[in-house]
Length: 461
Ligand SMILES: [Zn+2]
Image (cartoon, rainbow, N blue to C red; front, side):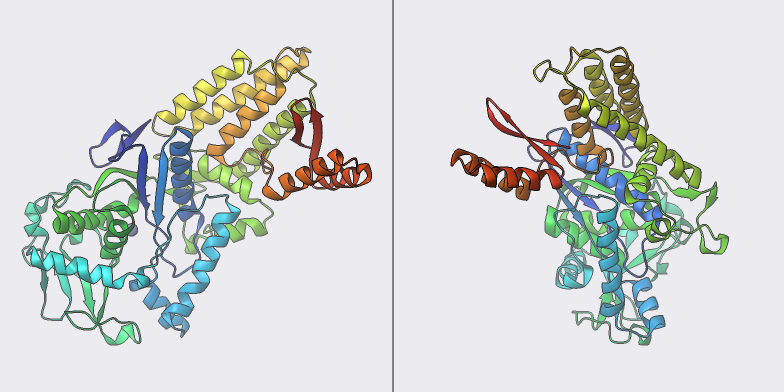
């Protein structure tokens, strides 16, 4: 599998640092507000990446942080007149609801910044030890970018033009404001109750140090993949590299992957243009998480995604087409042991070749629609010398990556398996009434039990 590594501006084969296990860090939400569909575009891309790594046989440990203290969370908690914790908790809850609606697989770790301030303080201390951090007159601590030779390597910035001693205290700034950035911000009145004691006085961490500290805590000083939206490349990711590599002397991350922006109807999404959407806005308009996910994954992650309501309607039509095909296959009487026909094998090869090539989802979807077309054509012609179950199985396998083809998983959950087992026990005890009752119960839950020479088999209705 190849990915486009922003650090080297090149397509590179994924080779994990350790064994067959990929450790990946994905910048998570700043929980000051409800996440919008632009945010979810990035999270869906990261989900596809995670799922395809697993499909390809890698183990994956993913960390997604929750930024619950920074300039924006404090500003908005103040504006709402509530504590930082109260303000951010509601948005954390909504975030987890939303990723569930979008069928985004949970990461292994969701560390919150406010739970990791000691780790951040320790990291800043290391930067002091290495002469890369200094405290300014206002009490805040800054990273001296002139003392870190690799500064600018991710965003390809020339630091030689930088004005000596310039500092920026905001978490977010532009390349034009290239300057020493804040690691630790001295407490001021706007921070109110928010603050932690540190060797440099009371204050709070800068946004960038949060991700360095949490990434290293859960994934080690060097790990494989770091992702985020392209707008995080500078300054956020550039600063993460400086802090992490400055403290450890080791390469922080091997592959950096960045997803492009989402625009709406050809324009930048903004509240003033009235084209700003959260997931909830779209659900209220009657679209399902599945349809929205389909639109969000349908463009290549490094291409700008133009979100439109036409695209949502098209996604509804595309999904129905696959659903109808799947239903037709399920209803087809075909030999169980005939295996996957060659034309479906080709679809599988095309699907994998597309995703191996820097997660080319549009091409992978095209392979699926070729399969649908070809399968329908062969069913129309009355062919039945191939296994329809094997083709359904292939679609389920595709869906391990896409998470959008079949709303109901073809695999039975523990409760279904337990019922089927109880039915089999009743049958062997010749309690036919109980066995029939359990069969009916399974039927009501959408499952059919078929008794075969190899024992009972469950089939999704
Ligand atoms: Zn981050």
